[in-house]
Image (cartoon, rainbow, N blue to C red; front, side, top):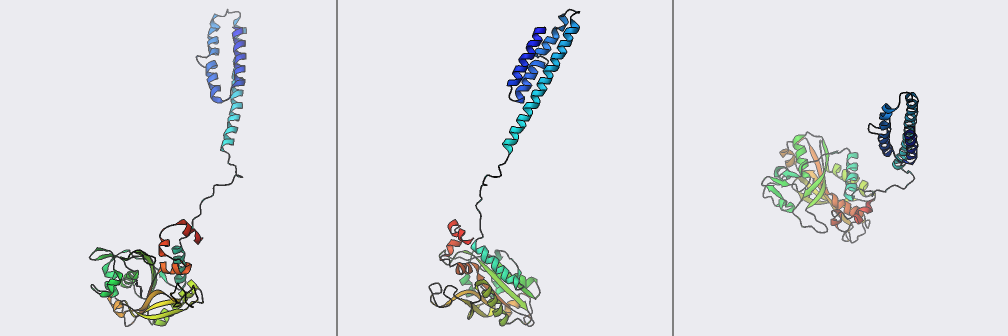
Length: 340
Ligand code: DAH
């Protein structure tokens, strides 16, 4: 028995020094010290030892048990440390490594121009208001003095959802919505998407964007309209740009004007972009037709107002000299990356 004890002690010590991880250590511990373990089996043999040898044997058994237990415990601490270190090493982040660079996006040219427009108009005291893209014929046409069968409707042929509902052909219906729900003074701009049954080409798209302006108050004159649009033109394209008002017709304004800006490409000298005229048409405007004011419930004896509407694509095309409107919609990164 003494030999068995010495054997097991030296074998376990040898095995412990070779063990690499705490899993194997636990297996070894069970194999030796567990209920069915080798050391436990030796203990069972104690009964057969003659009584006079028992105290000495008992003492030896205890010594060996203590040695085994402390050797196993020591190994557990040693392996635990090694494993912890390995884990830390594996989880460590090398902050000196170069990071994975992300592809940085940029604003779409339309967003840049729209942001600038909103900046310019809110700077002049306008409030930004939005309206629905699926609109009642009533707001899109009727309240703007375009009754059913009015020939001016043809210029804005659109997508009808049913007899009374259309995809709005311009942002002007937002004017009517605001006039019917608010009292003057009114000073709003309304950006948004509009729809027309147009074929796609270099200057047309069935879906495009406009921004509308409306001011209604006492004593608003065409001078206020002119001052507002001059300020807009200077702030968007620079102080060298002048406006030119040409008489025109819109059913919802009287008088009406189309407004041209000096061609920023040639400073008014005449080039391909302005077809040699030195001027570029950018918007429609006018004094709000008193009939429209009355239809919307505003006293046209007390109040006057002006309105204007322009295409945002057109402004972007002019500012960045974009040769074809379709570039704005195709999401070609080679195009979009130029607007960083
Ligand atoms: N709604 C017009 C269009 O889409 C543009 C326009 C012209 C808007 C004159 C106005 C205006 O507010 O007063 O062609």
